[in-house]
Length: 175
Image (tube, rainbow, N blue to C red; front, side, top):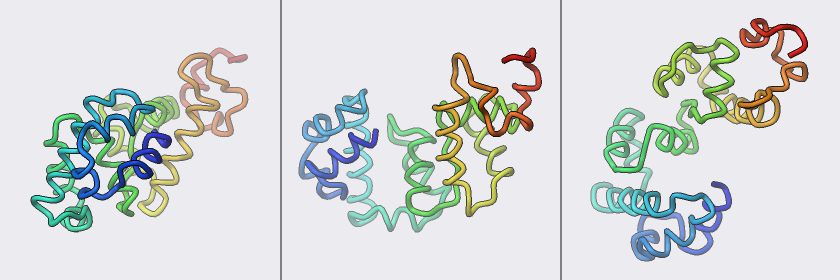
């Protein structure tokens, strides 16, 4: 995803105007490393169109409407879900905690959330983490999920949070 974002910035540009000028084909080619480029490019171009037509070309005006308004506006675009909007909000300083597959797994194993829904897990984690540390918590939970709390063969013995972990406590010793 980072490579796709970098390529989008260097070949197309990151402003809504630049995205609309370049068009869907250029966006599709730029974001190819992330996969699902057909649906993602359509969503990116549509979000850029909304930013230009409704908000004068900048995301700032949209973002100034507040967290819930941004969520309503952007999740109405086919292909843009809660996680994408939350990453955008977090990147602009909103105190949200985006939930990806790693964050979901770690949160559930640690016992921080019993929910299986995106919104439920985000709500639970936002009750655990203070607003000013939520994005950092998001990044650290991803790192823990990728490196230690793996989907298959988690390395519980190496986990710095094992003493707090419901999943670890439920495992036969030696896990």
